Length: 116
Image 1 (cartoon, rainbow, N blue to C red):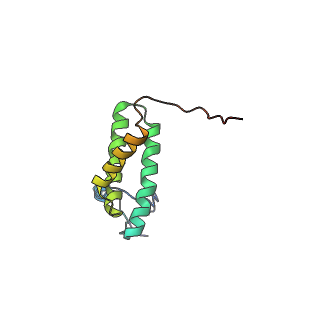
Image 2 (image 1 turned 60 degrees about the vertical axis):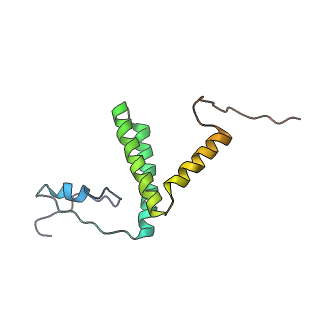
């Protein structure tokens, strides 16, 4: 296999500059491929779940900020790939907030009971 040996397999979407950053270490060869539009949309959906899980595991406010920034970046990329206008998403968000409220009051629904 020559100079390089297999070190790690990731098979996941990464930010555009990550391969170059990794290859700045002369001892590492990076293997990548370009995703189709559909594959990219699918991988972005997986990635947002990964980042939400990382947000849930974050212990410091600084880590939470980093993870929220990653989630926002993926949200923007998803809207672009799915051809969803950010203004439309914001309009729907505001409509839903007006009709159903936000999460400002911390209402925690325990149960509902039907009349006999």
